[in-house]
Length: 429
Image (tube, rainbow, N blue to C red; front, side, top):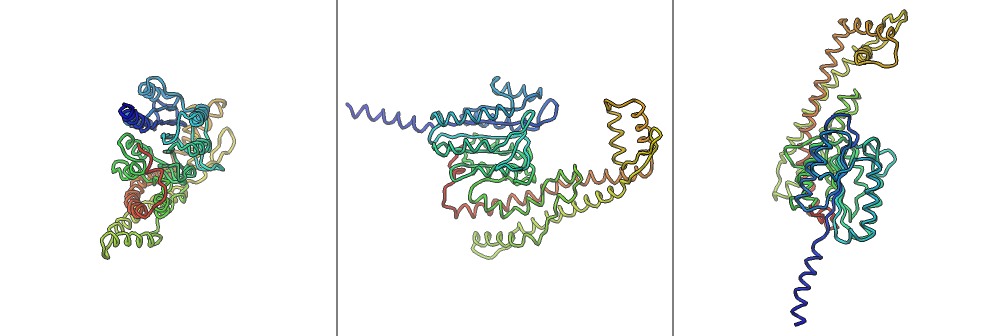
């Protein structure tokens, strides 16, 4: 009789033990300008759908101040969403620490922390800062969760989808998995974040989800997503030159720092191509030409050609952006043509705190200067630069497409040789 009772009790106990707790926290939507929506809405919705489908206990801190985004967040969370403020982030991390210390989150339970917001370059932190509603937050605070989770046997994964998110890989260890949507030097793109969150709830481990998201043909951007596995470190290092070459295309377009977008040197990748051939030879059992060699060379050539065209237009526009003087309110005022253009725009939009006479004088002078043939030539060159700089994104994405293939090939080779712990493979989405 006792034996008959023990068998079902053992089965019940075993089933209860197998139901590990899955807790997910989403921080996102900070640092956005005033409008109805944020650029992170799609990623947020994708994350919620995935965690709900996967049976995750999810807490969200999203946005704050954008009418439609707030409405979406409140509807999907049934009013439980809180604002993405620095205080809320700090308090939630303290809350997670308390859960781990009390055993609410215990051995073999899973904790997923995701961030989709604007990020900043590292500036003295071990990780980096991200934007919140009305401020910034130092992600070094996550070190507290990492140490506690590892000590208590909680499986921890962090997905940082912000710009410069590669810096967050410093939180990784043989017990903690970290995924970033960009390198430590590069900006991120929303599509990459969404391709990652789209994998949640599909019964994949985090390593496989990362690799599948990286190959998503809909969302290939020049941002080089990274993962903290041993194979990921090798593949990321091998392809680093490609991601650095695509570095911050927006700087070339927006801040006019033309040299911030470095040309891609085909000779620099001779070793990378040799490694690719070695991988192909090993796979095929014979010497073979790797088709990625020609594809990479063409993508680099297209990128460099487009970059040079943009740089030539930039150089011409700078040469034509001459200093021009005019009499304003009986005084000579001298500015570059672009400054006169900016001044007129600000005046027409309304400049508080200035006397009407002062404003009117500068307005008349700016209009006169902006009607000259010199300004027309400058504007034509600047418009040409803007157009070509925008085209760089398409060419950079072309390099990124090849980078995805190269990265995957190197990753799979290294992964087959790796025998150490892999917390990304052990983390189930």
